[in-house]
Length: 120
Image 1 (cartoon, rainbow, N blue to C red):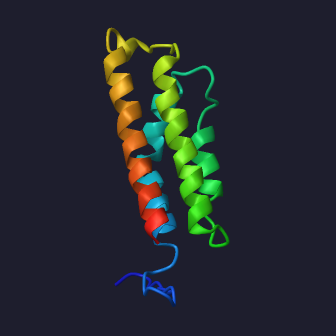
Image 2 (cartoon, helix red, strand yellow; image 1 turned 120 degrees about the horizontal axis):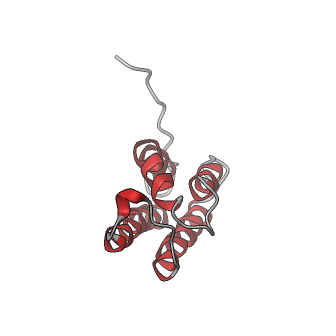
């Protein structure tokens, strides 16, 4: 058995507090390195800056609405990169479409997490 987590419930609606933050942390733990790899093709992005900015906002003091706005900004950033020129890597030869698909996939997941935060 693993370590047990205490789940704190929101008094008004019975939904667990910090669920969206926990889901986001889990998502970034599983997929953050892939996001970093994708974003390193864009000169305007500095390494894992986007992931680290989101992780920095994953605190219990963050309100769910503020956290949803942070995730929404990350979605906008990812979608805006579709318009930018990128530095293709040798493995990307002729696959700019694949990069845009990756940007949209990460944007969609972060958008889902933003919606989850808004419903909490």
